[in-house]
Image (cartoon, rainbow, N blue to C red; front, side, top):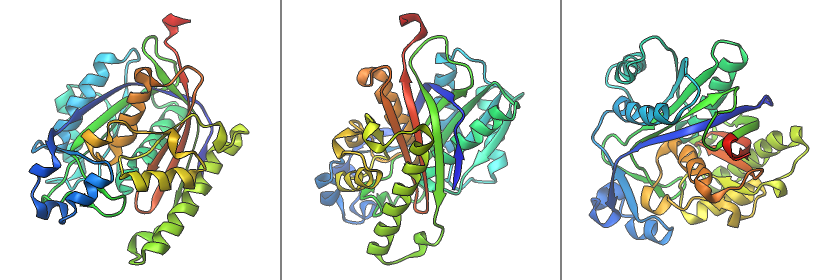
Length: 310
């Protein structure tokens, strides 16, 4: 289990999403015949795009740059979508698209929908090592092959990207999250299990463990959490994640899940953006829970107001 307790700021969240498509317009085979199940779990739409993943990442990054007050000098690029040629080629395509060929870059993958946690750890590590003053964190994925039903989480996979600036310095304008602590844990063999009860038990224990590891250094408990952000899973799965984290399901924030679906690792930033858009108040404690099949990250953050409002 990895821990990092040095504060950084997340700000200027941007996104680039596919076209919103009602589930009843998606081919039954692409949903594995589970349309009614998805509707019962609170999902209504899926986002569909035929654009290349680096292009989605570019659009999101440009929106982040437009809102940022801190100049970016490094990039962490997160994806689990198979590249046409290589991850390096995709990263070069991304740099050309944002017209910033002077930036260093790191590609992060391997945690599926949990890549946000690993990407944030890479961004924080770059900052703490003194290799950059601000890092662009971008996560982008899309479905290849048409199949969009995800049984693990009971959700529908959507195409899109989300990005933010991770900095040691507080942004000069706009709301932000101050990351206070983070932890990541893995259990590599659980993804290979064909026993749902084993998967559920292992997942629950891992989430409980990683949430405690993120809160205890701050002398906090799950009862101090005001807002929980998870992936856009079905209602039952989101309640399961909340209870595993020790947080009341009523505090699980995700009002856009019905219209957005599950945008892989981008979900966490999309949820955080919603909190910062008037839902959370300054001082509210937020728990960002990034979960993949075998990797779980918990990020504890505090909502901070715009400097101009103080």
